Length: 126
Image (cartoon, rainbow, N blue to C red; front, side, top):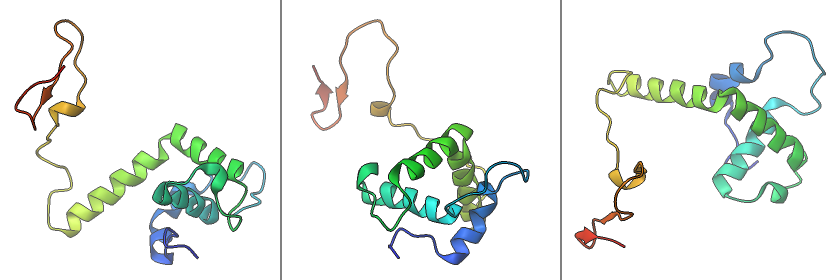
């Protein structure tokens, strides 16, 4: 068991995102929970997929599962649900009423000088 592994309660909260809608297809060799735990291990530890410990399924299997879920937008759906639930638990509106964008993380669209503003230097950068 790794610190990144989902607890039973956490798994129950999101397991429906990983179930097949129909009964067709190949039967899984590895449980979906073990695959998700492998993905969380890589994300939380920052290790390379190939360095996934042998306690998990083969790294290609875990990565393939991660990639399919990403293409389907499953991670975004899970994040939206968890953020909404957390906001409701805190007594806040489930939808944020304000959004802040950091100007240094937004790319400019072209024409003009190719410089940015360095807030630490209080001036324009090269």
